[in-house]
Length: 171
Image (tube, rainbow, N blue to C red; front, side):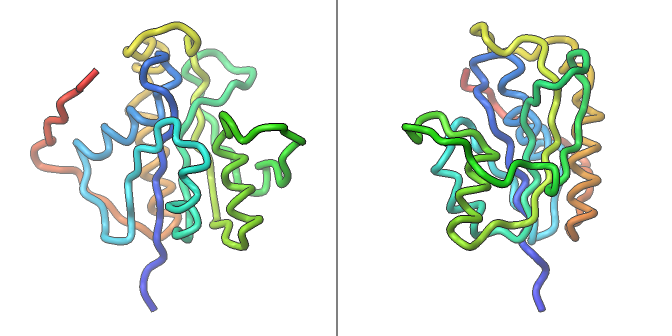
């Protein structure tokens, strides 16, 4: 029996400050860590429904995104699968589908993988900026550690790179 496929999916818009936290975590993981063959890192950006294919082809999904809760900016949340919504409220359009709704559509297709969300309370997510706020940037090590722990819990492994890979920013 082969190891289950684990998708680490960072979502968000890197042009809107903390909204891009999930993508920035994926970039950090790619630069600083090497993962077992059953772990796939995926920059989901703002793809919405286009993420269905990688999701339905996974056994377990670890989503990294911002979550607006009641905590101060930089608060890290772990949202278990059983706490994620199970159905989508009526919408007249599939435009701007969020990641939880995409997981629900995967289930409707008969292939919802196990899932957990590592969420981060944003400081600023509505103004144009390619930089994370200090509140979120200062927690990046802890956010990364939370994701690495989830990889292990799901059956994957990782090791720190001896020399981090330089990832050139285009934006």
